[in-house]
Image (cartoon, rainbow, N blue to C red):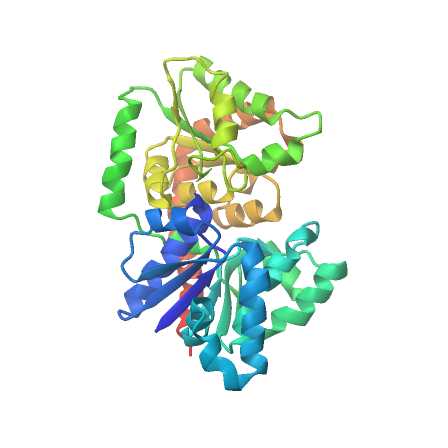
Length: 399
């Protein structure tokens, strides 16, 4: 069968990449004849990172999605006599011939993020218009009020299956009284790391050098830097103080970007600039900055080699949990805590409003003191979490 995937990429945000790769891997495992078309905002970069023979890349930047793909797909619905002509446009052809449109937006229809509502709509409407099954893969959603609630109640009932990523998302969705919601946590938990990507990651690890010290990964987020901009909180200084505190305590620190776009200073889906600002303030033999864009699989393998990570990226947390590396997480929405609760580790995720290097370093000391117990909790919970994530794969094959 043919599948179309939207709102995720191979490049840039490696959380999106891990969801994308997990879906390709799990679907291909069940459907040996599967082919995929990925509608991406980074077509040139994604072609470089795509390692799958059954995946095609089509550009679908927001403006193009709104002004070309959506109007043409609407015409496809309204004017059946010209459908053959419309299918000469490759995006419409992909949608019309696909059995499923997978929407992999990581967080959608959320109060306070109304500026993204048009994009949230634009990623699912083409499926409605071309009569393609639409499944919203595991994602954070809600709360719902005002215009967000109005649009959500208008459109979400038409989605075939909505996968609630955690208990808080499910609680928000239940306020809409929907009958098409299932509990299925983050797709990224199902991503496998191939031997080829492991070998590439090992090259990076060798560049860090051997050390007898415990190694701590630090993964900042441009999203939180921007959220704290104009406040009395200095996110760059916060990370600097954390790293310096870890170095003073005898750890080796590895700074890396979980979302990265090489050869650009644009900040969307790009933590490299904030990492470079932090790195410029650190001068220590036990400090390493990985100043490059790595694949989602490479990052997961490197995170597996860390003793602990301190992260502000949601999917860096998911990657750590997937490989039994304790994560300490500074977040900005309910999506962090609802996942950590599955591992009985909610206390290790706290909001950016509480941002304090002293607090983080204190929490880190507790993590190191209880590291064995934390790892035990992760090992115990992970099989059940993966089984839960598998429910969205089952939903894809139900019809």
